[in-house]
Image 1 (cartoon, rainbow over the protein chains, first blue to last red):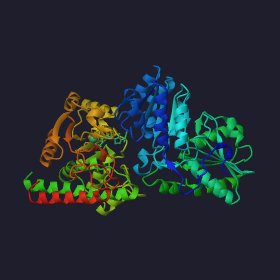
Image 2: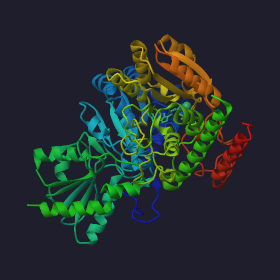
Image 3: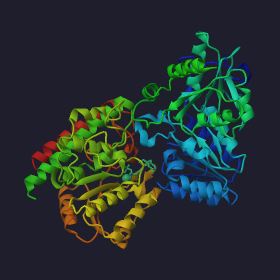
Image 4: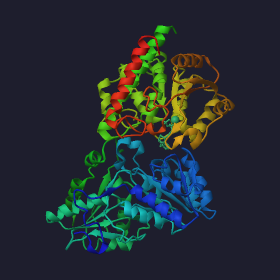
Amino acid sequence: MLNPNLKLNTKLFDVDVEKKPTRAGFGTGLLALGKKDKNVVGLCADLTESTQMNLFADAFPERFFQVGVAEQNMAAVAAGLGVTGKTAFISSYATFSPGKNWETIRTTIVYNKANVKIAGHHSGIMTGPDGATHQATEDIAITRCWPGIEVYVPCDAIEAEKATIASAKTQKPVYLRYSRDKTPLITTADTPFEVGKLQDFWVSENPQVTIFATGYMLYYALVAAKELEDEGINTIAVNVATIKPLDSNEVLKFTNQTSAVVTVEDHQITGGMGSAIAESLAKTNPLPIEFVGMQDVFGETGTPAQLLKKYKMNPEAIKEAVKRVIRRKR
Amino acid sequence: MNSNQLKDLKLKANEIRRLIIEALDGANHNTGSGHTGGPLGMADVFAALYFNFMKHDPQNPDDPDRDRLLLSNGHICAVLYSSLALSGYFPTSELKTFRGFETRLQGHPHRGVLPGLENTSGPLGEGLSQAIGIALARDIDKKTYTVYCATSDGEHQEGNIWEAVMLAGKLKINNLIQIIDFNNIQIDGPVDKTMPLEPFRAKYESFNWHVIDIDGNDMKEIVDAISQAKEIKDKPVIIIARTIPGKGVSFMEGDYRWHGMPPGLKDVSGAPPKDEQVAVAFKEIEEERKKIIMGKA
Ligand SMILES: Cc1ncc(C[n+]2csc(CCOP(=O)(O)OP(=O)(O)O)c2C)c(N)n1
Ligand SMILES: [Mg+2]
């Protein structure tokens, strides 16, 4: 069942569950930050509305900078702002930022210790019709490898707002991952959010498998967990809202009872959240793991539902992965 | 070029516009997405390239001696797909699969999945460099084909473009013709407000390019410009095609909101109701066709 202590959306499994894109939470979160702190500034590269930075830009035109289609320049300008007392948010599609401007961010923001938050939008194959060029499926891998950065991947628009606001509490650079399509609201305003903490959104008695999911894929993991329970397979489903920092004790805590793991993400399985969990467990509690995500292939054009099915990331595929990993249990 | 040939090219451009609307109508049904403004604006340039200037054979798309067209601003691929289909690279009926599931007509062009595509694009600012690379390989191989590269004004805000401009100027690359869709729109609004590019000609001249500045929706000016560009032997050439985004569909012309929207998706102020947008677009394009035939356009 859904963890009753976390005040999750009780209508989550209804057919008419409320949906919003996580980018909406970026928009409202940044606006709230802007109201609270006049040192918050925003930069965008010709995607102001699409990335929802327009809310901030309209409210604080003097603290918003339209840099044109120029992601490298945007990153380095933000670095300058970030070392001069500002909390700078840069916003674009993740394939372009932190994709195209990767080394600029590495040097001028991360290594340079600039207070910059990188908002990467259109993550994963859920981006849909634009095709592989616009579907960021490597962004977690290429950011979490940077020493000194934090990486947040909110599961819904409500958590996205909290994650955005939380990112300004640290002086460190933070990578924030958002998505384009509307996805179900899993949490409520009262659901706790804490950087570095994992939360078991689905709990059951004598669980056999721990499912770690990140971002909006958590919804599909929860659907799978519920359907598996009906089939007599008990699981825990954990929300990995912050991939870095990742506390190995937290990972241990949720795998102690189960002894098999499935990871679920809309990202390449090489280097993403699943890899981070595997790295952690390899040191503390080596277990069989199945990785649900993009299996070393690029995406393509289609609707999110068509693509999730084809690339074996829908609830059916997650259920199969759980059954596979059970067979592998020693 | 005589007036009959000019008329034929105008008819080709008109047919490309019709196919663009067909493709986008398909994209709207498939995934509720697509870009319209840029493709319609560039239909005249693409008609001149594919139906007059380019040496190419749809039956032999890998001919090593073919002229190449690289599309740098990949989001306007509806005009490229329509030109390729009309040339015979694949059936025009396939255009309606645009942006659908498992289509060869990906949302942004993917080289290798569809015949006639010379590069993969979508992320802006990367096409001109690839065109230079192809021209360099051509020169090593002592071949003589022309490399064309279509770019856009918005993407000239990418530093990568200017790195390429500098290199082509330094190497005095010959037989490299860039045609920029200078339509003064990008996603967030007019280019001259978002990030101005003017004075544009002077920038290119200072990088040692030959510059030709034309009305990119005037077929005669387009034909004259490309003919002239092919005569320039000691420099790369840029044709600044000043186009009207959405050209040929009155309710889209000049309006940046049609950058990334297919007809039929939404009700928009100043446009017909969404259910009528496609029909109105086809009707206006058909009226234009009649005018061209009667010599009135
Ligand atoms: C590197 C990169 N950054 C951002 C984008 C998102 N984007 C797609 S089109 C576009 C506007 C480009 O302007 P232009 O090519 O002039 O657009 P058009 O005239 O076709 O409307 C932007 C910012 C992109 N495709 N690539
Ligand atoms: Mg433009």
